[in-house]
Image 1 (cartoon, helix red, strand yellow):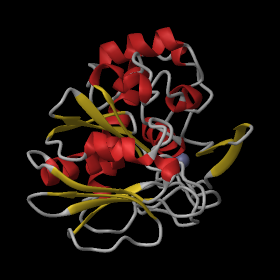
Image 2 (cartoon, rainbow, N blue to C red; image 1 turned 45 degrees about the vertical axis):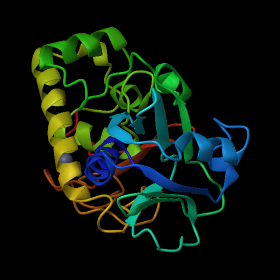
Image 3 (spheres, rainbow, N blue to C red; image 1 turned 180 degrees about the vertical axis):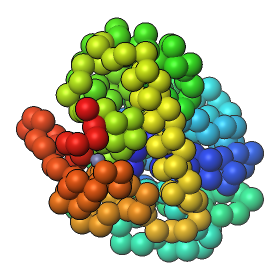
Image 4 (tube, rainbow, N blue to C red; image 1 turned 180 degrees about the horizontal axis):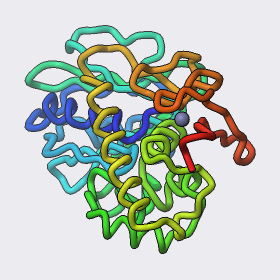
Length: 280
Ligand SMILES: [Zn+2]
């Protein structure tokens, strides 16, 4: 699953690629991609075709592409969705669900491997975009909102939840999932079950700095989203990405204290990778 840093890298690349261009051809290969927003495929094609792209924004894990008619093209990558830059004549790969080409050249393909399509795309009026994308309006986006550490401290205190669950709760913090919640807590040296309302000033600062460092490092590690064609390491492909310190590393030595990393079940379907020695 792409988390905030990877989606931000995609946003920057998409911005470079499409802002100022006009949409030429739209092909919806898989209707399920657009049916959350449109009753039939041609409605999406009509809404996007011929429109000029004005900006590419992001909130949490969702991309918001501003069109020139007070509408927004939403792209939610879902579980495994990804965007690729292609030439206008490139035929879609087997797992492509949407292709959009531009008048000045080039195209963007949305892919998602596997049978089930969890990615979503739609064109909605600007004022309905956040709601349609199911992004909680009050959730903190750590990159976009860029809070000070003191604001972050007040936010943590008010949220009053165990740290791991708080960071993964899209109603509280937008865009952070299983991977970077563990990585941020490791960087900060804080246990997953510490309550966010009981952190000392020093711990709040550590968590704040950890969050910034992990997100910046992840964006650097993601490199160029659209360019390389390869999808970033996902959380269930059995590979451990090089920039990760705990996620997927159970049994391997902690990069800080050499004790083995442990995988602990928090609740149904939610696990945390952590170091029992140096995360307290
Ligand atoms: Zn350790």
